[in-house]
Length: 310
Image (cartoon, rainbow, N blue to C red; front, side, top):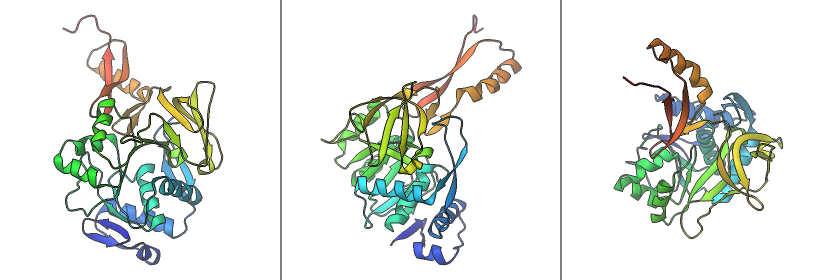
């Protein structure tokens, strides 16, 4: 049925425009409230950025931007009203909010579960469309039930963090299309996709229609289009532009550590770590790095310069 489903509860999109359903679960309630505001014609939505273009902040996105972004994805992935979607990522971030908007624009049935490292897939109907972060993808690949779930989905998108080559290679066992997304809050979720498996597997990210790319003097990506209100969004992502409408991501200029979908700024941790070290009598130079990790993508690592560890 078209509408939102959560743990046996169901609310239609029509009901949301006429009333304020009362539900006991706080997470489901927040999803309903967001959808109700969107369907009732609210024009601006505050969203917290994750740090892709600088320090995290709250920005306002207008309804027109949300609608445009949803339609870009719907068209690019050939999503239909008949699909059943699963939202298992956080509604606090733009990825979760846009899953809701896509479902509303399509009038698609969307099943909502609270975010978890291993999404609870038991008891769900056949899911056609799902968005995952790499940590969740890894957990699902580790079990037979998880792999069966992934194989039955018609379209899967992966975002919120980088994929290591080993994890990506495990996707070759699936024939259904799996895409890595590239985007940020300021671009209203993703604006580029990269096919990860099958004969159409892609090396580079391909931008969606209506997006223009360039680089600044640092070699960092600059994005503009209708979804950004035609304003240039300057990122700290180092890229290589390849031909028309394609790019390769090279890394972060500002050393932001993307660990399990969370962007961590070493500069904000430095004074706190320094205070803790001094409190236990350690006086040493140190650096905070993001080292490759098979589970988290990158793990926050403290490297100390000590002459004697005894």
